[in-house]
Amino acid sequence: GENVEQHPSTLSVQEGDSAVIKCTYSDSASNYFPWYKQELGKGPQLIIDIRSNVGEKKDQRIAVTLNKTAKHFSLHITETQPEDSAVYFCAASNDYKLSFGAGTTVTVRA
Amino acid sequence: SAVISQKPSRDICQRGTSLTIQCQVDSQVTMMFWYRQQPGQSLTLIATANQGSEATYESGFVIDKFPISRPNLTFSTLTVSNMSPEDSSIYLCSVESNEETQYFGPGTRLLVL
Image (cartoon, rainbow over all chains, first blue to last red; front, side, top):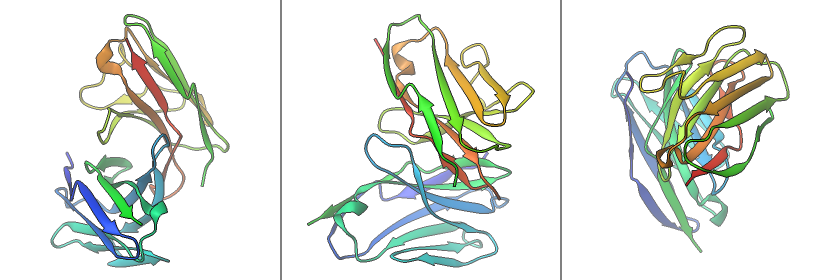
């Protein structure tokens, strides 16, 4: 089955700086890569996703890049704000089944 | 995106008992899923809830422990049976909206004593 590795496990950044989270996957058949943000006491919220026919996607301060050859994808958050503090999960999917990374706890210092 | 609700939002249960968790979505969806998130951990798929047929379980999860119902395209239940403290987790339902995009409910936080 699919195996998704996510790094780092924790990330502390100064407000206004950028944050980068990286994931690798094992199954070359995976073709859909979403990112979720989970705040304390809430369910995961989809923040951005990318499909295998696209190399990069951007939505305001959030961007995701995909390298299919290397089987890795990354989340970039620019101009971080305190409300960006949360746990972020990457996932990879083939045929509807999502396999999740272990998560990254992001803390934005004011 | 779909609006998903879960009941109960949290519960504290005694070992040996069972709890049924409900998931309601505001529109008809083909695919519904149940996940478990153990304390401080990532999400693990328990099963796919199929409308009109038996759920499809992932490796390590069995129907006797986690029976699932899916009576229609907007509702599903997950029962955690004969609970032990190891079942203490967040249980999440999700729905597939389109082109593999999944949206999650708020979760049910279960503590088994």
